[in-house]
Picture 1 (cartoon, rainbow, N blue to C red):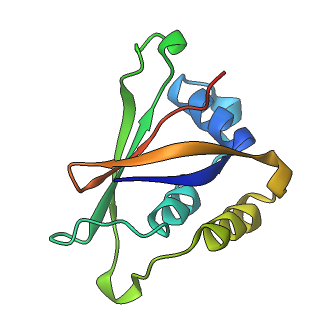
Picture 2 (picture 1 turned 90 degrees about the horizontal axis):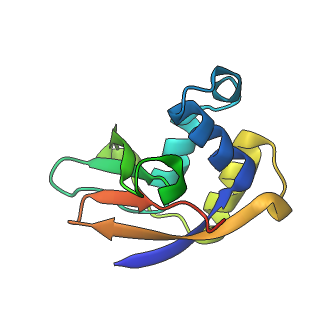
Length: 123
């Protein structure tokens, strides 16, 4: 199953900085809000009400494109409903104070029915 959504470039770069030990970049990243926005796209494991976010890195960062981070995220069933693309973009803009022009479009793929795989943008 594959869908497309937008990830803010600045946030992506900041997250990559966090994963590489850049504490200055990590100060600008709010993982909880970001993950909540990803979860709002509308995917969860029906058995556990948990979504797993998998952040993959490009080959040039020393990990050969392998997943860098796995984050299990509980999603309360009573608060679950799928968001459309525009709603997710709006939430990300609101939470991270960025404009639509700062978004890049990337592929988001659900594997094994319980993981959101966030691949890096093409650089």
